[in-house]
Length: 216
Image (cartoon, rainbow, N blue to C red; front, side, top):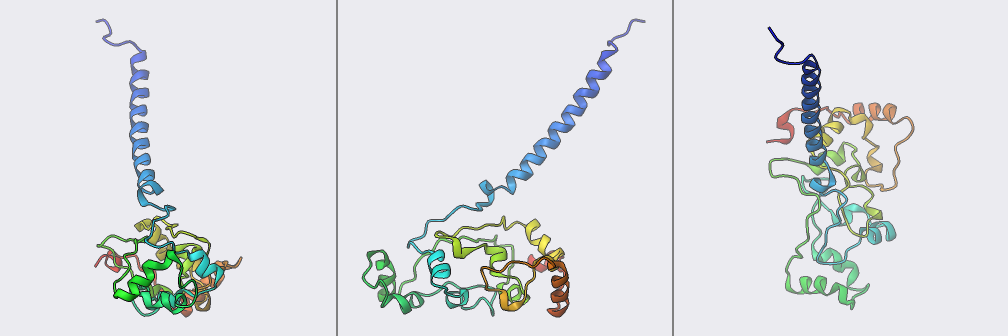
């Protein structure tokens, strides 16, 4: 009986099958990479705000501590958005006639909040508590980056679950002394793992990775 297929058909079939597997795997990898890319997560995308507010000027240039504006960061899940009165504490005297600050002055006069554009916006199904992270020795710059160098604020992390879990699984790599939490210039020491393990024990940090920790 004559052969229906040539001997080379086996090779063609194997090459085709391997090619399909690689193509499917490549498409899955591409989709995963795209999902975590700045195009989707909006990382490194400066957001336009109603006022030209510069963290670089206020934090880096003037040395204003994070807690001066974000007053509830140590005691609440929400870091807090400063009321206009906080701005006017300085700008009632400094640049008090600047046209760029008219929205601040009108907000204060009319007792009407300024509608800021949110930069770090987690999904509604995610629970995040600022106070617990701050009090356990996680620095502001660990999540928010060097805001003291940002004329316009942008996120530097993906804010995806994998990024959160990396810290929750290995807290010793990220924890710092509590007195350095608000220090934008802090650099981890060469023996960070040794320091981290000591602080994890001292601060009683748990490696919480169960779903209910963040999804409540």
